[in-house]
Length: 286
Image 1 (tube, one colour):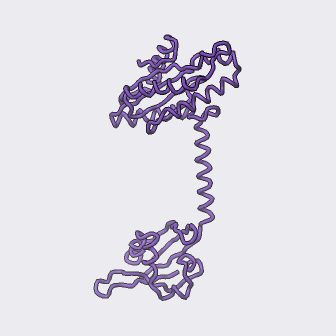
Image 2 (cartoon, one colour):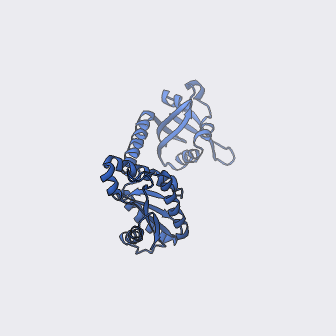
Image 3 (cartoon, one colour):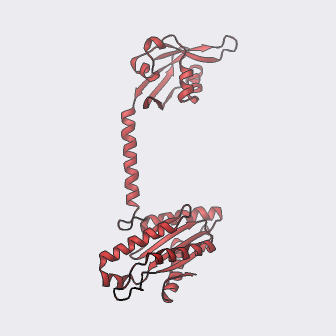
């Protein structure tokens, strides 16, 4: 299509563009017939509805000879994408428009599929919480971010007490179900923004809590203990009062730029071991 500038007779500034040549694609693009477009001032009114910023860019083509290429998405009945390229032609410009809706839809579907694959790859297959690799990546990121912001980072490590004996008594399938139920309980208990619940090892979980102070991390640890206790998961066929409990270790730091992720986790481990040494079902802080 070809469009001619319509200028203000006093200032010489371009007020709109008049359509000189229109092909079927352009006609469909404007959602008007060729007869309705040729000789008419339609560009500015159309762009005001879909992409007002483009008008000034088309003016620049006519005034300076610059060229322009891009994608435009808009809705007229259904959602459409068009690719366009425009170059100076006389006192106006010529524009080529291609409907790329089908290609864009494929790209979006592929992007969504890749997103879902990444999300699945980041999850522990059994418990459907984040896996250890993704936890480690996120921990490094948060240490860097919070060092710059001078904000605290809390880490809660959780161990399922005596899971080995539970597996010996009930079998590994039942033990796996315990891990799934504990993971669900952790997700239920943790409502802190940007928190990350991960399966860290066989019967261990890690909860990363950016910008959470130690006092609130301890409160959350106690909430987790209570949440799992209420599940009353049986731990012994001969003792109905024996239920699954947790050992929890908590550490909070305001990271420095030289913070070491392994050292940070090791401190949480020490706190968790203190809980285990005291019989479990307990939160300990290093």
